[in-house]
Length: 57
Image 1 (cartoon, rainbow, N blue to C red):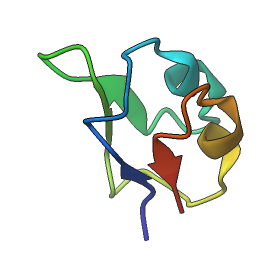
Image 2: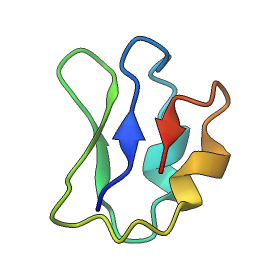
Image 3: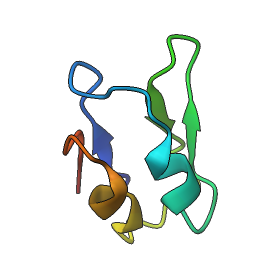
């Protein structure tokens, strides 16, 4: 199961992208975070890096 990103809350800072140990997160065309569910290992590392709590497990 992959993490969930609230696009309305995401500020596009990219902190989560650097916090993902498997590279499952990237920025979309609108500058918001997105998660590749096939790559995500649901470790939660990105949850703690988000300054606005836009990511949940």
